[in-house]
Length: 179
Image (cartoon, rainbow, N blue to C red; front, side, top):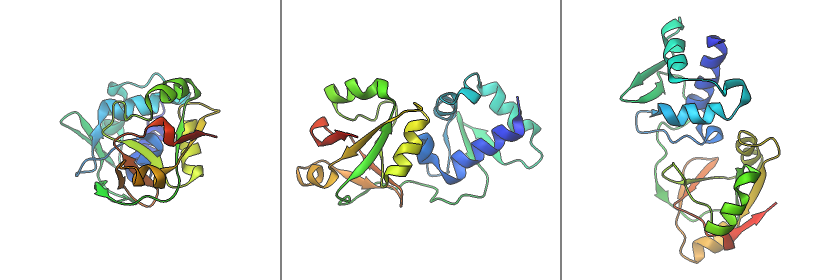
């Protein structure tokens, strides 16, 4: 196990791009260990990663970048993002995007876009971010185009996360176009 490389990946996920890993940081910048682990395991490089590995990464690190507390992990410093995604209900742009594994497309067609194990559906403001997120789940990810303004006008709530991320409680399939 290359703990230095793992530490850099975890730092990137927690400090700079939690939306690429579909992580929701709490007010302290923490995320449930299992949520981080599940996200990292989608990459074949980390598919056998365990909580023990994360603990060992922290213990062996000279720089002490992370801490585990109450079943969560957070970075101590160096964040380039707001520490908390605030649920600010807001009119979304005309279109938002969502990257997903192709294996989930049939379920999305049946049930709409659901948050699954997270509090919200994560949507990207730009297609490039959606592609990056989707490729974490499938090297030929399905890109969904959300007719978000129409959905908003029909009563679906959207929340501003930050300059790259929007959140929704759910998005019915009638507002989704598979690219």
